[in-house]
Length: 230
Image (cartoon, helix red, strand yellow):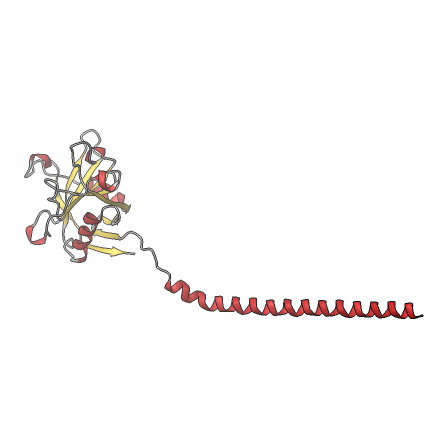
């Protein structure tokens, strides 16, 4: 009887211990759950503040050129061609391109549907800012492709407020060897149909320089407004 009573006592103690262990585990799990819930709630509360404080990496600026033929939207590469692109933006911000024109249509003799159009202040001194340093394509890594916008100039370091938009690639305008080439600084993102219409505009047979012979547009196309766009 004593042995049997002792065994019963051991079983009861074991059951009590197991129950206490299970109860302790449940309490621990419940405590952990409450801590995790509070942590998630704190994170959800702080998340909008964290997102608001996170730095936003800005994209490349866009400029819209409004003309009677339609709008042309440009993307300017201020990262790879900062001097040239920011010079263009300064003209836009100071409204120097408002009322300027596309005055030249340089069509390829081999394919008249290719070439470039030239626009800007047309070297008018009162609308021109100081000349800028030349950024060759060997430095920027940009190339003269279809839709590229590139600075017009006489010699390197003389570019001011005139530029060209290409129709078709023109690798000869890139820098190579001892040739400094021209400074590409962006490209057309919409409005290439407008660019092609301007390229096809009637031109005068003469010009003020031999290089522009037969390329001056008879009725220059007005840039009614140049503005930054999102």
